[in-house]
Length: 320
Ligand code: ATP
Image 1: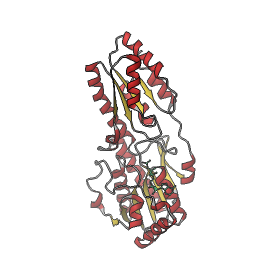
Image 2: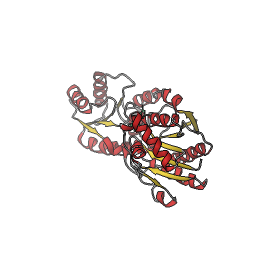
Image 3: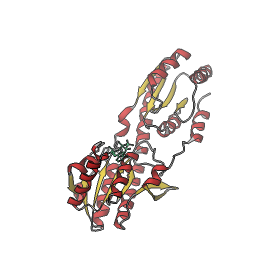
Image 4: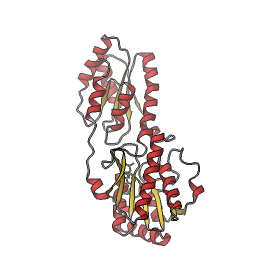
């Protein structure tokens, strides 16, 4: 391949810029031309496609968000939208595309690959909910952001002898929740993967209180939601003042951590190597600390197990 494109799609994640930078620089180094497609598949349909050079990605590795912008495109899911996208690939001479995003973006990449535009997907989402990879770009930064914010809540909860019920992101998965619960010493983590009982949690808190603990953190996964309702019920059941905080989109921003920058750079480089060999319809991932790739359909059919052991550890080493 002599000319490739790169786009970011779906929800943004810290480290996407590092991935784009790596794709652009690796392609240029190999003598390829590389185009940035703005706002994901929307830009592919609208022809919002710009040639990238070394300077285009200069000074971006440490920045959150995505310099290529991102979007969700309903039109891309129609036959007409897909056809326009294909025509624009031909117009700009794009022989392959690196798609940085989540599962939905990979479905689009599989469709484009089947139309003769080989695509390689890079897992870019804070949720770490992509089954074929142990790690997704943005996950570490998001967990660190959540941890820092919960630490701050802990300070104020301590001053007021309160319980903080904190909702963290993660979409349908409890990975961010269970990790931040362990990292912040939460008394309880509530995720959809493990059944929970508010009466039991309340009893545990009252026992802890008898043993001297005055303030509590409960981490709730986005998939459970309803942090306000949980806080209200905990207060009713324990008499301990309880406040809900939803951390929200702040977890999607910020300068990426070392891990996110390095993984994004490695994956971006690997994706270009695949396209250079004319290999498409693949998703890049990490297994046993090694960068690997999978057929997109195979990747989409995989299931990711929840870390039940870490959940158990979170509960067992909480104050009792
Ligand atoms: P995140 O996990 O952050 O939400 P995502 O990539 O899963 O990221 P989606 O909104 O599901 O985000 O998908 C992004 C875009 O991919 C969609 O707007 C659409 O253009 C395209 N897409 C999603 N699903 C499909 C599909 N089944 N077929 C073709 N294209 C799809």
